Image (cartoon, one colour):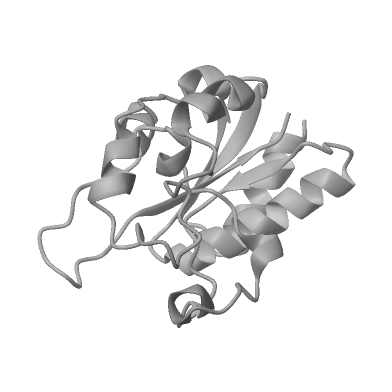
Length: 168
C-alpha cells in the first residue's frame, strides 16, 4: 500500500513522525474558527488566512474532507519543514494517480509574507489551509494518535508542528 511508501518518504525528508490516519480519526470541531478569527496573529485582511470573509468555512470543509478515506499525518519540530514535506507528498500522490491528494498545513514558506506588505502572494500555488482553519481539532486528533502536542507557555519553547496530506 502507498501509505507505507509515503510515510517512509516523509521520514527520510526529516519528519519526526509520519503516520497513516483514517478520516474517522480526524476530529472536527468548528470552534477552531473562533481561534482563527480572534486568537491568531494571522487573522488580518492582508494575510492568506482562511478565516477571512469569502473564504471557505470549517463547517463547509468538513463534508468535503470526509470524502477522503485516509491520509498521512506529518510531525516535525519545524513548521516550514512540515509544510514542505506535505506539499511534496501531495505532488507525489497526485503523480501516483491520487488526483485529489490535498495538503493541509500552516503557511510558513516566506520569512516575510508579501501579503502583509500589501503585495500579492508570490507562492500562491503552494498556499493551503491549515488543519485548524479547516475545522480540525489538531490537539485532540494528534493526542488520540499518541503524538505530542501542547500549548506553549513561553516564546522559544520547542514546537510540535503538524501537516496532513489527505490522499484518497
